[in-house]
Image (cartoon, rainbow, N blue to C red; front, side, top):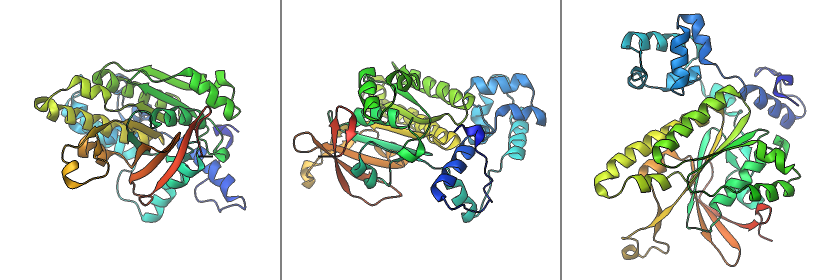
Length: 351
């Protein structure tokens, strides 16, 4: 079923098959992005719209999300022009208060993408959510990258199978993406391996600035292919920052740059109804041993990472091939743990 074939108004009564109707509503809703080209009908010239797109601002919502200060940094944009731009955007998209009922309708657009493990899915409320950032942190060999590969395949499955019925994008900062893993995971879920790889955009980032450029580039791709992408993976979010910024003298600048990147990702997740999955590293806590903490390790990135991530998962090794996921922070689910395993076909339940 294509997105163009599904039409349902949000005020229509609920049909007997609630799940099928909800899926149809989601498909229509996520494809309705307001392109910046519509600003041309409100007095904004084509040259300025082109400059907006080159800056990674491709939708009306993104215009509203961008501060006037940052818009003025675009070459040729004066304060007067930015004011006119903001006024035009406000006419096309309401960014003011809405009722709780209206907000509930908007939240119907949220999808959950399965991790491949029922136990892990139950832990986090059905899977990783779109319009949100899910962060997984832990030591090496705990399954952070394997979850990323599994999600890239599952995101392509139909909604009824726990998928997102869309494509995935993978920004690789550590050289961890492996097409062989995608092939074996695709075989598990009955997907053609070549088709699965064709539906995944992969880019290798070599420094933190390049990483930001790739995020801007992929956001433009999301706008071009409306409602087609469901997942953005960055593996890992922090690795290049730890390389580019060293010592306490550069810590403040690093955190500022990281904060700007995370702010952009939060906006992309909401703007395009994308699930953003980030992997993060851990570091030893020097004071952990003094307070008798059982596991004196903490995620890198400090409070900035904590505030930006919607759901945070702490992954650790269990017995044998078993891994343990713990909800470290989430607005949706309580703190709890669940086991999972890394199999040839990706993330799976512990047998």
